[in-house]
Length: 306
Image (cartoon, rainbow, N blue to C red; front, side):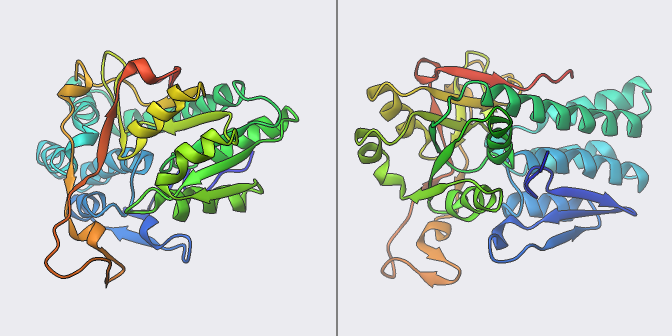
């Protein structure tokens, strides 16, 4: 089975964490060196890594900090403060719980990461089982290597699958990351702008929608990259199945309890230093939106024991 570099974008070698810089893709594959937890937190805040990369980074950060004899409570507080919508608190509390219980911390961390890897593979396999030969999948944002893996499992069952990827403005994860990893894995992928979804669906070009989720509430509502909600509404209107690859549920009871991260407006007003709007114009950039449970055809969970 082939894996995208985005499937496991964090490595730990000789006391240093190496973070795949996703902001440089698809033009360059380069890694950021994180020598301590402050560098790791900075990479998360700046979206150098996102989605499952952040989860992996949280655990490697604890592993590194433990070996450096750092105060893990302080490390946990710094990680929890990085990105509000993603809610790393249940991860940091898990690690602190292992430490307080006297469990071998390194073994627990590495064991969890291995379980996470296998759970992601199984999640992709289950998702591929929902696809039919000839299906065209629309996806939004990027699910860190899961989409090409879903395609690989479909291939093994002699199913030919193709993809449409939204650009996912303003960070362009769909065109920079998803389209890149699908193309390099040998799949037919077409990029559309975010505001083309209704027209493309009305033309009958889409048979399934598959997205990820950065946050799953206990009632089944999800938070995912801004723009997911409108795609879910369109999928319901056009009777297209809408599937979500989910993390474990958080303590949030409903989507209303999930805090939405508001990113700096310069991230949408500028791209690589070039102004996209007249001087003095304001921008508003909520990084996520909430898709209610009633619009989701099926949650595809990762089986992870805490």
